[in-house]
Length: 124
Image (cartoon, helix red, strand yellow):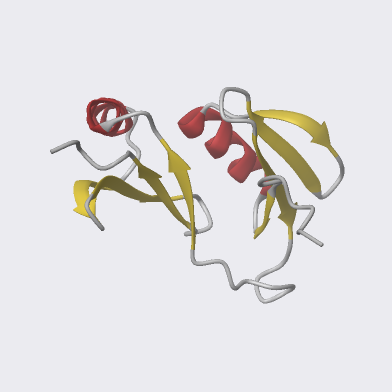
């Protein structure tokens, strides 16, 4: 029997300040809330259909094994343009670099979680 997995469903992260984290993901990555509970919010990014669930937890409460979240962007030019926009908005980042042959931009959310924006490898 083959696996019934058809694709990615969602990613859930624990955060210290739900309001600040929700605002960051909405403002910086253009996500929008579609479910809001007392200690949890589900955000979606319409064009990519990505779902991110944020749950408020005290530091040290619950799992924290996440290394980073990577979001795809269409190409290196779009990534460079977004890096400039993030700078204008005052969002700290490491600038666009090649990582594993692909243009990549690293930044952190309000809880210090690593966020990567990555474009396809340039065509030779």
